[in-house]
Image 1 (tube, rainbow, N blue to C red):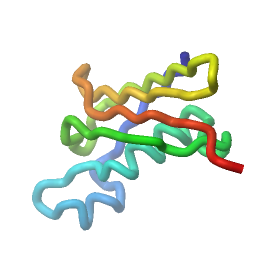
Image 2: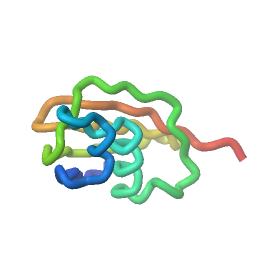
Image 3: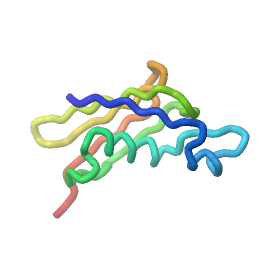
Length: 95
């Protein structure tokens, strides 16, 4: 199991267009940052599926948990303020 913590400050450039007046962390940014922080961004994995369950606002503390099974697949869970915000299933990318 791997763990990481994320936080996107209100000054992050993604908030300028996502969405002005009601900023939200884009889902792609959440997953990319989680993979980067866990050191999985270049591990030959791809996102098989993802679900976004909660909108994440700027300056929210996000906990990332990753569990890998024996077959090499991994499951990410992202929690914002203790609530499940997103999940993703990772698998080995085809060669």
